[in-house]
Length: 560
Ligand SMILES: Cc1cc2nc3c(=O)[nH]c(=O)nc-3n(C[C@H](O)[C@H](O)[C@H](O)COP(=O)(O)OP(=O)(O)OC[C@H]3O[C@@H](n4cnc5c(N)ncnc54)[C@H](O)[C@@H]3O)c2cc1C
Image 1 (cartoon, rainbow, N blue to C red):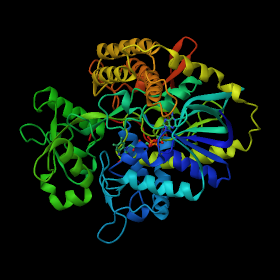
Image 2 (tube, rainbow, N blue to C red; image 1 turned 180 degrees about the vertical axis):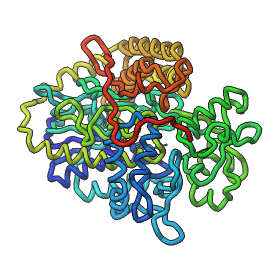
Image 3 (tube, rainbow, N blue to C red; image 1 turned 135 degrees about the vertical axis):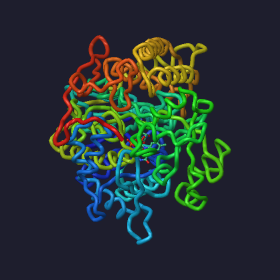
Image 4 (cartoon, rainbow, N blue to C red; image 1 turned 90 degrees about the horizontal axis):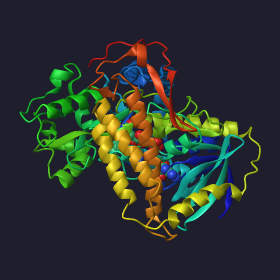
């Protein structure tokens, strides 16, 4: 057991965490970056399709990008934040390129773009279909070069408070099983999304809502958690992502009769309407009997083998390995599947939460730039813009904070809680059983189409699972790399967050973005053009609302 001290503590080493770390170091702060997996194994590594930016040198206009993001969000995104993101996007892409990201180029040798959904213009920069991997590895090089202190394979179990402010974290060193105190004058959560609350999901098994729950437990509100994105093209059976870049390059969506059904739902944008719209269209085709085995098809045959093998080689391999389909020869069965959480820990454009000393950036945060529905390729952008801003703000604020008096005794409650979990006698219940049950009910009740009864059923099950969780035992009693303990802690984080998702969804009695209720099928700007906030109160979760910031773009009917 030890106590470590830094100016800024960043939890997470995905794109947001690494960008925040780099920014804080450049501001002169002593920074610790903590991650439960090796940095380049973070989920950002799985990002495929690309990153958006409107480059003026390409005749593009940031305001057009901003408007399409606002429209994509179904008017729930905060327009001041969206303006910041879209204005800073161009320089951020160039900066990444100068750091070493080998973005694809066009025939003239300039940075190449492809078109993504919900946007009229091609403004998505990409590295084949491994954009996240390319960016993450380059940022990791910068982290190594900057000699950042990385606590690798350390698992943060709770935030540590002093005089009402966050001043550190309790972290389990996974190799030894020891719990340590890492003090920071500022703590930035960059812990990623919530994907594994659902089953299946495109997200890695490590995407378990840790930061959302950590922040929620110290009083930070979770905003718009009901806005859960289902991606239109996830592979039959296992939910692996087939990137939107396939449609960006021209792939079709067809039903069992070979019809390009999107002409019925989005005659102008067709397959490149925004994700909520395409997912609902597919689900309608499936529900009305025009699918096969709960799936429709993604058809790339007309794109030709060469394009598929150069620009979409990764999904080509995935389709072959996991569905036995050669994309140049056969349409591949796909369906809408859990992909992304638009909501998160509420922050301002500099990553500050309402709790002193606590910051958040990346998918775990809600700035809010995605509102009710995120445009494809806007999330990688979100991570590097708001990661940098949070890093700079935290490093600046830390200069004003004095030395903390916290000692190792601050870990006592956490040590007690873990000991209780470890000492309990094993039963037949396991973290995996609880997780799968949670994933199933969420995927049934809080998915593409929702109604009161289904959401209430999901909420009831989550509350029952929380009760079961309070009696859960960890079967492996060892100290070294106790993944059984880690899974158990992760399931706890997910149950808290799942409850917030259900509560927000039940309370929003309208349809907006990814939240579509068959019992309230219309958007209700009068009643619900506002952000849902779920806060942990003394007697459990409490719901309140806060207004949406509108700058230039008044709500309009949304059609594609
Ligand atoms: C398959 C897939 C493809 C995607 N493709 C695209 C795309 O093409 N374009 C786009 O814009 N977006 C895409 N997205 C979304 C985007 O990749 C993510 O939203 C984004 O990368 C999240 O980055 P992050 O830094 O917030 O979190 P992550 O990359 O998920 O990193 C989270 C970090 O937090 C750490 N962590 C978490 N909990 C703890 C804990 N308790 N203790 C210590 N460390 C912890 C983890 O170790 C990890 O380092 C895709 C997502 C998926 C799943």
